[in-house]
Length: 136
Image (cartoon, helix red, strand yellow):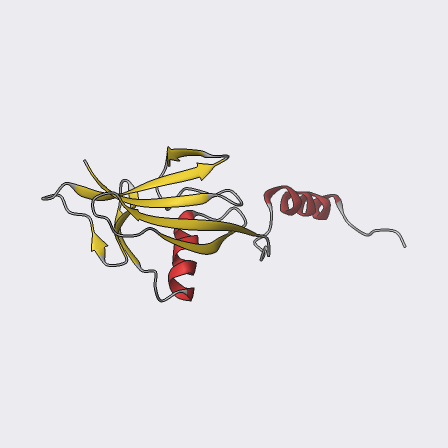
């Protein structure tokens, strides 16, 4: 059977193909989240979760919080700079004590600070994201 697609219809079909159509993608990237405290001797805690296909760290942390009562976090949104991690498991960063939560990523044995915040960072499959309570 011959296609009855007109040139205009073909253009629309090509645009949808090239630009993409919103759809559910079932691909998930498993990641681990290591919560560590470099200021006290509190034990490290490791959690497993996943990021959606091309999904950001914030979504993975929300998913973890929704599925594990032992993990909580708070954040604030800055209209110029995006999302800032304020607390993890009840421990809050504080300007007076010069403490904050640093975001790090570990891939292939190398640990580096994330170059963007949790609202933009896209974790790699198998990556360990480190939420490190530290001082400046």
